[in-house]
Image (cartoon, rainbow, N blue to C red):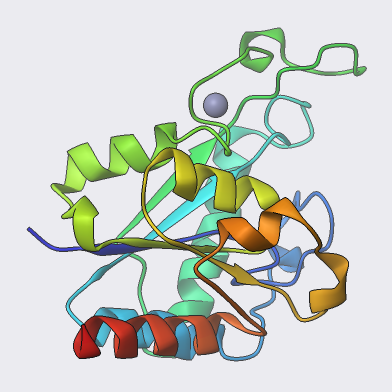
Length: 191
Ligand SMILES: [Zn+2]
């Protein structure tokens, strides 16, 4: 069984431009390609886990989300990196937006901070959970890590934005996903 490093998408691998509804809005953050390549070379799985309420909001179809993810895959490929799998939550719990898709407006078990995406990935890919990590830029990512009982790393270029509980929940903080992955791999090897 292989361990995984679970990665959030917006704000972790690519610039967070709010709700991303077209492939043109996918632009890799500095070091993101190298971070994923380091995971690939380490023999661990690189698994994307992302909340995409744009589907529930009716701003983006599943097919369009596919083209957005293809753009991400292509940009990572240019850096010699690949994702082993992509899991997304299309749901959102709150109703009342014009054009929303009611079938996705549910309370689900996959929207982070729930651990559903990680659980499904672990089952599908036979992941060694005991040696896996989660890297993301939000409280929801760290919550999902905690719910799944794996260490979480907070990536934030502006660390002052975060205070209180979120900081005690994370194993460590890092300015970029590349730094986060480098440190995870060092910690694993020195353990
Ligand atoms: Zn969901």
